[in-house]
Length: 208
Image 1: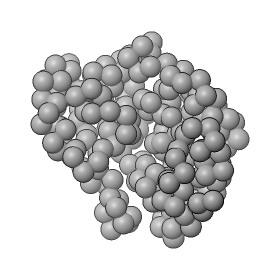
Image 2: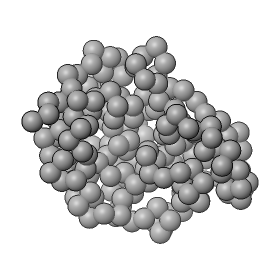
Image 3: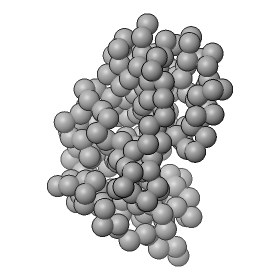
Image 4: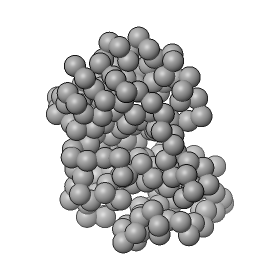
């Protein structure tokens, strides 16, 4: 059996006094994630660095009420909710088995700042109500913008966790960027000098 990656020392820097909750969530995901179709077995040796910390370093960017589209295993939504108890999180996920998992974790960790919604992002009835929206590893930017941008208030932010091709995705999504009123679109690197592999986000403001 593949073993869970040891907790990196930097986890304490990233989570502070919320580290115990992060540990409990990570342990639960390691124990049940594969059998419940949330993560693959190859992810255990890099669960902390590639998934938990990769999500958590984005936490300082958020405020108010934030949606996570396609929350899945809770990456990044549950991790961000652990790291930022002062922010209200709406985790939007269409698959029943995944929303069941999310509800179980919210209850187990006693997270009172999280709402779970079973819905596709484009079908959720809360469009235009969020201060920001995020997503991680869902789809290409040109596909993701039409799903996420309408959920945000005018003046709110789209903050999407992306990989090494983030800038290329921006170039390929110029039509959608114009159509959905995104301005100040840029790639930001998060967690430099904190984690070994910084997190890239595509960040933009919605101006309708």
